[in-house]
Image (cartoon, rainbow, N blue to C red):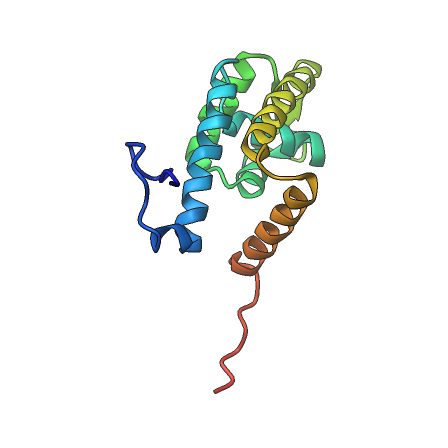
Length: 163
């Protein structure tokens, strides 16, 4: 019997529901979300902290608007995230010397150390999530999920209707 990850009780899901890709993806996403959230919360962090620190580490200093676009975090929420990261000395916010109306966010050495810790926690959650799969299956899952995500991303051109 297969439990339904979408159900609040450990009852088996009907067979038809266990073969619907969108339902399976939603169930796996719910498990992944829980695993990641639990680990980050144990360190007083959440996924938005991680996303901002990763973006700054990969792309360097950025404006709040750039960080919003790169991470998918709404601009209105970004202010609170940056305040929290600033309170922890993980980021520094300074006026842009070329445009005093905007701020440039920079990752600090404390932020780099914090990111290293969060990277470890995220990796632990991924290991637990993917534990039932072989390394080859894990790679295939990542490839397939990437293909789905790229295909359905708003910037991805849709195939023309050739009828």
